[in-house]
Every structure is written in C-alpha cells, then in structure tokens.
Amino acid sequence: MRVKAAVLRQIGLPPPYAASKPLEIAELDLSSPGRGEVLVGIKAAGLCHSDLSVIDGSRPRPTPMALGHEAAGIVEAVGEGVTDLEAGDHVVLVFVPSCGRCGPCAAGRPALCEPGAKANGAGTLLSGERRLAFHAEPVNHHLGVSAFAEHAVVARESCVKIDPNLPLELAALFGCAVLTGVGAVVNTAKVEPGQSVAVVGLGGVGLSAVLGARLAGARQIVAVDLSDDKLAFAVKLGATDAVNAAAPDAADQIRRISGGGVDVAFDMAGAVAALELAYAATARGGTTVTAGLPRPDSRFSLAPVTMVAEERTLKGSYIGSAIPLRDVPRYVALFRAGRLPVDKLLTHRLKLDDINEGFDRLREGIGVRQVVVFE
Ligand code: ZN
Ligand code: ZN
Image (cartoon, rainbow, N blue to C red; front, side, top):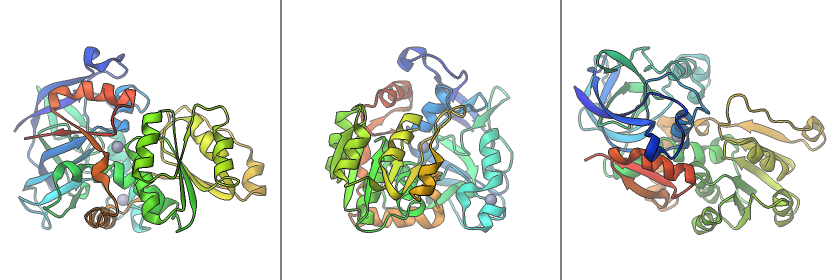
C-alpha cells in the first residue's frame, strides 16, 4: 500500500527546520506484513528528543529513514504466525523489539535485547527486513516503528496490546516518554517511599520521571532545568522544589535544600553537563541514574574516589529498564486510577505536514509532548 510518511534523507540540516525541512513528507510503498509482523494503522505519534537526535546528527542512523518511535494505533492485519493479535486490537508500539530468547531477554531484561538492538542500529525490523520503499529504494525503519506515517508494519514484538478505551493520542506517550521516565524511577532506581530525588532535564521523559517519583512516594522532588517555564510546570506536576541549572551554584542549591544531596538524581537531558550536575547533587551513598543519550563521542569524567569513599552508584537506564508487556498495562492502569496523570504532558496536537515546525518547538523547549494525530 501507499503511505504518507515523514522521511529523513539528510542528517544535520541547519535549524530552523521550518525552513530547511529535514523531514520530507513523501508517499512510500509499504509491503504487507511478513511472518511474525503486524500492519498497524497509526493514530498518534509523539515527537521525542531521540527523533531530534537523529535529525541533528547527535545519534547517527542510516538514511533515508522514516522517523517516529513513540506511537499508538489499531491493528489492521497480521502476518503469518501471529496468533495473539487481530484486526481491531489497540496497541502501543515499543521502540526496542525483544526476541524473547537472547541472553538479556532470558534474564528478564528485554530492553537490552541483542537482536533488537542490532535491528534498530541497522534500520530494519526484528526480522532483518525493510518493509518501506521509495521508488524501489529501501527506506530504513526508525527503532522498528517508523510511526510518523499513516500505517506501519512492525514486528509482533514491537506491539503491546492495550485497553481500547484509552484515547490513542495519550496511549502513544506510554511507548517512550512514560516507559522511559517512570521506568527509570521505579525499575532502574527503585525509588522508595520517603526518599529524595532530583530530576535534571524536564522534557517529556524528565517530567514523566517527576510523575514517577510522586507515584513512588518520594518525599522531596527537586526539578532542575534551564527553563523557568519548565520548572514551573514541574512544580504543577508535583515537584517540591525547583532549581535553575544555569545558576553557577545549582549543585550546591540542590545539596542545601535536600540536606546534603538527594538519594537519587536523574540525568534526563542527554548532555554531559546535566550528568555532572546530577552526580554532584547526589548524596553520600546515593545513586545517580542517567537516561539521557549524549552524543556517542561525549565523555564524562569523575573522581572514582567518590564512588568508593561515599559508596556512590552510577547507573544507566534504557527505555526505563522496562518489561513492556508488564509495564505498559501497569502504567495505563495507574493513569486510569489518577495516580499517573500523563495527560498533562500532552501540550500540542499537530498534522503530519507540520512536523518540521513541531521539531523547531521541541528544539526550543516549547511545550512538553507534541503528538501527530492521524484522522
Ligand atoms: Zn523517545
Ligand atoms: Zn532478545
């Protein structure tokens, strides 16, 4: 079938993107789902910093690539061998397909699936195939999803079936922002009731971590960002304190208001300065979690003596250390119960044709989550 999709042909075009248009809205050919694959009618797809990182070259991927990895939609057809999904099912798409058989999958860590990571790096589906083409030239898939498109063919392993009563424009957020941000708190850091936390970087993932920290019962949640608007928004979501990261004494401020440093500090910004700030704000015996994705050539230096003498822990968190089949339904149920108000993160709805303008807003830090809505 023919589908309208947002395709990145050239990495690193200069902003503003409204003028340089790195994403071209093109008519692509989408093949039928192969064995173990599913055709999904995309209803909503969120704009995430990881898409921007491909556009600006800080996370290089093969081109041409159809972007978009945070999405929800409705199953329209299933390929051979798919027996547990059918047309009409509502699904959230997950940006790491997990094979279920490799070492990390067998250890209960599907976020680290080895064939999944290999396929994502190569721009293919889990099967190794590409189902998108432009005039017979193969087009790469973004993280097995490529959801800035009317339809997508994805691996069965990229889908989590959800409650059909959840509005799909909200459901999309559960695929990346919520899974990554809440998961960093509850899975990676395992924040306990009464602990103090700081969240550095208040995009969709960082603000999801603020919601997650409130859910986990943190007694103190220090929001940290360069934008006073984002700080005010975080306080509305339940942060107890706010510190502007531009202040030269930002780390000291966090240490002062938390009585010597927070138990857990999260770097959600993807910049080395943010990770350094998070580490400096962490208490003796505390844990620093990084879920941002800095450029691959970035380096972080620390004095190892602090890890020893202060029993400090530094942990990475990818896709919120998620088990998506377990976590997505959990978070959806918590949203329904009013305990995880992710609807507050959805600030803009846009049409596919206006996606470059949307990435300008994301780059400038305007709004939180923007979702492309398909009729
Ligand atoms: Zn994302
Ligand atoms: Zn695996």
